[in-house]
Image 1 (cartoon, one colour):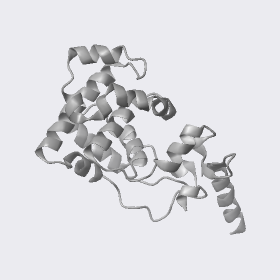
Image 2: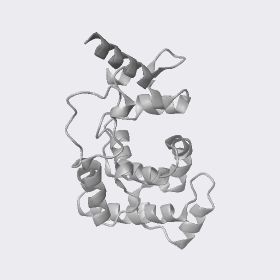
Image 3: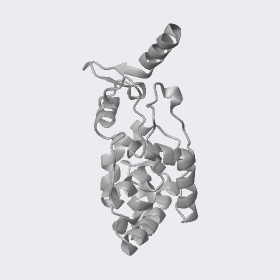
Image 4: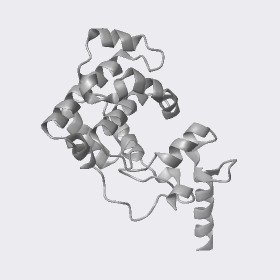
Length: 205
């Protein structure tokens, strides 16, 4: 029993990192101040609202194949380039806007992702126009029940779950792009649909 407890304590220690400020955080945060702020103030906090979730959906799509810190550092530029991710405004974008975005060095200039964001905005705007809050309700309908036990190590945190797969399948059925199950699980984590702060992280307390 003692050995098992020692192993658990060792795994927990390896899964958190104590920063220069003396705060223990999930190890993936590292020492980057912006990552630390994001971890402390946003990651795992419940996020609601059609526009807020559309922004999250869009940024997670742009993140595919890249590190999240790359997106996080460019987020102010993304918000400026995409009119604050207002679905109604982005849904109205035409060819001139596409070329404007493709020339904007503040964002990730990937044409497929730019086009997907505009297309997704049109779908999100249709949902919200028919029933305000519909996108929020749709996405949160896939949030799983709270875990009985918090993860004690990063190894216990999945990349895909049945719920993220179900969300991905439904969004794809509705025409949304860049919404694969791995991307949707990352969205679930960042928007607080799941809480993956590991044991030993100050947020876990």
